[in-house]
Length: 123
Image (cartoon, rainbow, N blue to C red; front, top):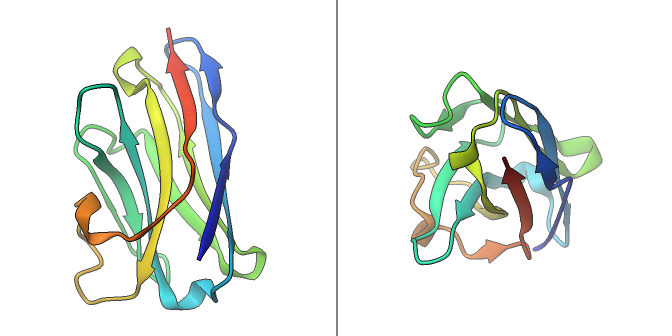
C-alpha cells in the first residue's frame, strides 16, 4: 500500500484545513484507515480511524472538530479539521491496515502502512 498525504499548511487558530491521502497499490475497500499525528519528542497519537464503510472513531481531543471520511471510488482518505487550536500543530500521517474487527483502535502500533506526513501549523 502506498499512501501520499497532501493539504497541510499554516492556519490561524479557529481556522480549517482539509487533509487528503491518496491510496494506491491495494483496494481500499479491504482497509481500515486512520490519521495520526506526532510532535517532536512525543509518541505518534491516533486522531481518527475509519472502517471499510463510514464507521468512525475519534480521539477525545478532536471530537466535534475533526471529521474523517473516505471515498473508495477515488482511492482517497480525508480529514476535515475545523476550529483548529495551536495544540493541533503536528505532522499528520495517513495510515492503513487490513480490515479487522478491532478497527476502532487508535494505537499507531496496530498500523503498518504509512504516508510520509504533512505538516500542520496552527498559530
